[in-house]
Figure 1 (cartoon, helix red, strand yellow):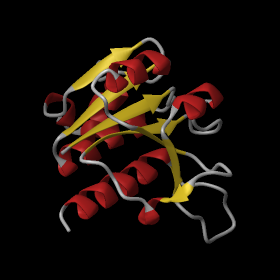
Figure 2: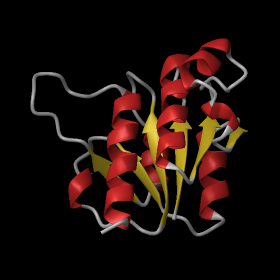
Figure 3: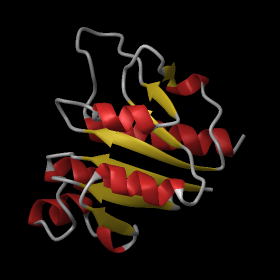
Length: 152
C-alpha cells in the first residue's frame, strides 16, 4: 500500500511540515508538492517537519495537474478531500490499495479543475460551527483512516 499526498497550493510552510510528520508516522507515503506550496528547503517546513523531510520521499511539480498526470500514469486513483455535492464521508469509502489524496489551499480548498479530474471526492464532516478543519489536521485524519481500512 502506498499513499501519495498531493499538496494543491498549500500556502503555509507550517502545514506542509506537519503533513510531512504525519506522512512519516503513517509510513509508505510520498508527498507531491505543487504550485505555491513550500518545499523542504523552506526553513519553516524544515522546523515543523522535525527531520521527516529526510525520511518521506517528495517531488515538486509546477502545477497540481502535472502531479495528477504523474500519479494517473501509474493507474492510481485520485481522491480529493473537499466538501462537494458528490463527496462521500471519509469513513464510508472503500479505499484502494494504492491511492493519491489531494489536499487543497487553506482558504480556497482544492482547485475546481483538480476536482473535475479527480476520481472521487471525500470529506471530513463538521459537527460544530466552523466549515472546515486545518488542512494538516485533515491530512492526519484521512491518512490514518486509509491505513486503518487497509489493516482490517
